[in-house]
Length: 329
Ligand code: TRP
Image (tube, rainbow, N blue to C red):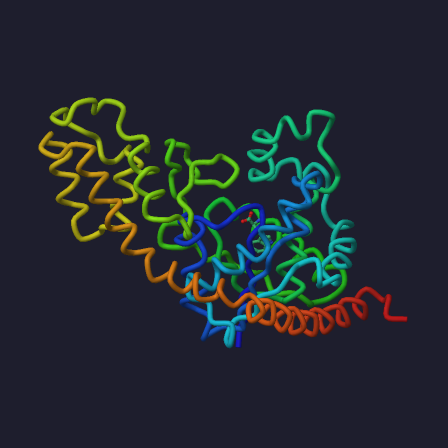
């Protein structure tokens, strides 16, 4: 059986961008792959080293969101990154294979540095600049073949493949070159019209958002700026709200686009109908989330058990690595 590894940073709850970018693919493939889902607390600390409580508080939120999406703990392995020290060990060995210039060129790192100017105003840390190496280690510790992710993570996979190739070339065949698997909607626009829905930009609808919150957020969402009055002809192709209609209301989307363009459908009605569909779509996920949340001892058991399986798998890989690198004393 081939292996999937993917993960989420515990810096907040997961949102519908995560859901359609990555979570639904994990759920879909969990029976056909050895599936590892990592709560990336070490990675979260690279840009939240000064907020350890925030990371700690969100570890189980992220676990609950994965379970809410339909991950079956009898199939998939859910674990905490920092409890698998082999990942940190492999990161050190991989560090020799990646130049600083290559890290500085990584488009995801570049975009994030732009957003985190304040945090790194005294200079970027070694840990943050190097997190793509750590992410390569996340993936390759499990010798994963497939990595379900959103579009923003593609450069990370590109870099992971480079690391795998270089390691294999120098020390002998050890790692597969993993592929990214993008979701049906690999990038969701933010409620504010930003190209990416993101926890840190505060423009997201969360999987666990209550119906009234969803209504409120959608009401306030950006639409086509040229459609001021109901009868103004709209441009659905540039409207974030229409983007969500295509996901949550696929059947009616074509018609909505037509009615919006012609000026027969206004934003208020369009948004009301979207909120209804989104709330209905998320209801069974939220129900599942509540059920797990009401039994946290069980959720902690799931993670403990998953972490112990991840530990075993990681040790196997490190044995191979140590032998290949001639440090198997
Ligand atoms: N960087 C990913 C994100 O921000 C999270 C992540 C950490 C990840 N390690 C990973 C994703 C390994 C896939 C594989 O969403």
